[in-house]
Amino acid sequence: MCVLKDDVADIMAKVKDAEVIVYATPIYYYEMCGQMKTLLDRLNPLYSTDYSFRDIYMIATAAENDESAFEKATMVCKAG
Picture 1 (cartoon, rainbow, N blue to C red):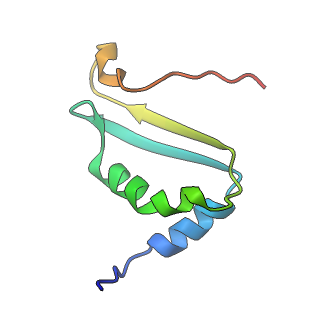
Picture 2 (picture 1 turned 90 degrees about the vertical axis):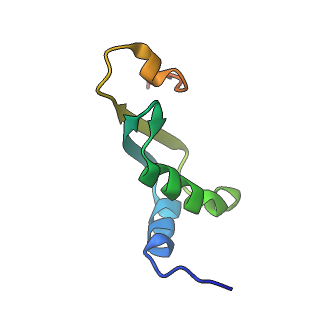
């Protein structure tokens, strides 16, 4: 079995104990950056555990004036 030697275990522990999660990514070719996708894939086992956070936010930016750059995103405004 191959064991990856990186910081994901430390990152996962911090994410699990966080109250709020905020991700930020540039949009490349109408998708999040590869590093963000890899991080989310690696954190996937966390979401079936008893994590602390209840709110997750995504900040994204694109060098595109057309709103279609964000067509896969849903804008949710939460008052409160």
